[in-house]
Image (cartoon, rainbow, N blue to C red):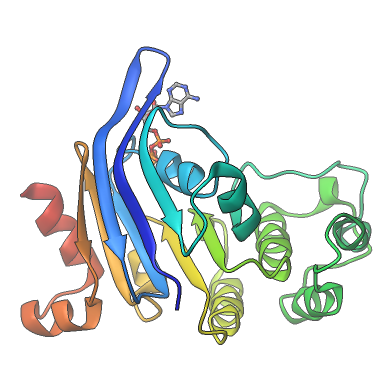
Length: 232
Ligand SMILES: Nc1ncnc2c1ncn2[C@@H]1O[C@H](COP(=O)(O)OP(=O)(O)OP(=O)(O)O)[C@@H](O)[C@H]1O
């Protein structure tokens, strides 16, 4: 199983400093929930990990991949803003992905679209917000990269779609070498999937590698964790 490590990261957007010395490490977890209040840096951390943005100091390692390009090759990032041309149908988007990335599992992607009722003949611009989120997730998963970074995608999904998304994520984790880090405020939707958690607050990351152990010890949920660590 690949480990995931962030060491002494410094990140600023122009004059705005987001991280001045952030570190965290997970050795064995496969589904890690990333918590933190609005503006604490969750999206930034996910993008840095996935190689989508530079940082000025520190190191990030996804398994053996540490350079930005190697991390990008080993990671998919999916977020609300991910978009495709409005005129392309879901089916065309999947075919394009296959052309761009030979390892893209188009058959699996089509199967998931069918399972979660994302119509493949409908254009991206005409899909609902929830359907777009699901399609973006299906594309990310079907690229078969070992690290998947998900930025708050559950908000616009109805209960049936949330359950479908949970099934897709569980499928993804059937391969032991895969890791998901998901930033979310919808703790209850991922509570049962999560192996570990990290909480960002004011430039510090608190990690809980064994979430089940933490739950048993504290008799508490992720929601309680957010309340406790956030207040501490
Ligand atoms: N492109 C950017 N340019 C300047 N500042 C930015 C940029 N992106 C993010 N920031 C700032 O960096 C900080 C962290 O933002 P980020 O989006 O990572 O937080 P977040 O925890 O994901 O927030 P939320 O829960 O609201 O999505 C915020 O203060 C934000 O204003």
